[in-house]
Length: 130
Image 1 (tube, rainbow, N blue to C red):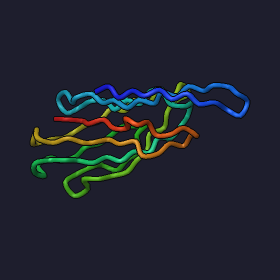
Image 2 (image 1 turned 90 degrees about the vertical axis):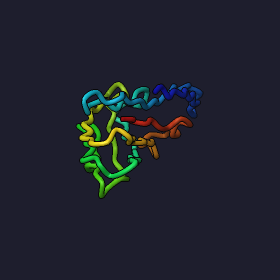
Image 3 (image 1 turned 30 degrees about the vertical axis):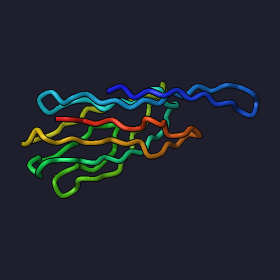
Image 4 (image 1 turned 180 degrees about the horizontal axis):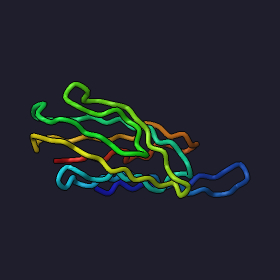
C-alpha cells in the first residue's frame, strides 16, 4: 500500500523545506514482513498506534524488530502505542513477525504524532493484512 503526501514549508528565512513522510507495509510472507517509513526528517521520532482487528482471537502475537519500539500485541493487548526512530536519512524499516492461527486478521498502523515541526501527513496509516 502506497500512502504518499508531500509538504513544503517556508521557514522564517524564506527557505523552503521539503517533507514527504510516507508509511508502507508489506503483506506478511510466512508470517514476516516489513513496516517502512520514508521521507521524514533525520533522527525524527514517529509516534504510532497499532490496532489489531481479528474475526476471533486465534493469533498468538505480533512483534516488531528495532527501530520500532512497541510491546508485543497479543489477544489480550489488541491496541498498543509505540514509536519508530528514523535514521540520518529520515527513513526506517522494521521487520515484523506475526504468529497467526487465523488469516482473517489485520493490524492498522497509524502515525499519531511527530517529534519534528512537521504535521502528521493526511494519509497517515497502513494496514498489515493477513
